[in-house]
Length: 68
Image (cartoon, rainbow, N blue to C red):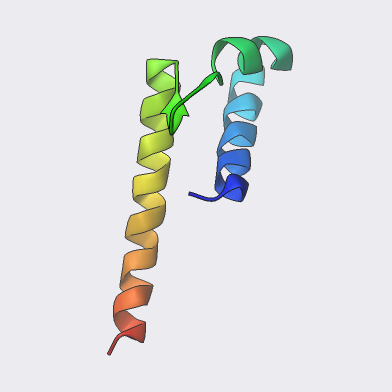
């Protein structure tokens, strides 16, 4: 995925966790530590892969339409 998608995902994670009272620095240092193509935190990593799967599924119908 593009860096823009990763930035959007991380912004969404930060916004959601801030609602729970966490500080942004806590979120970025404890939850958003990158590991290879994902994240070290298992829950955040799963969210990242679901995010990408949803984007891929959303783009698939458009690609089929264009390929007709």
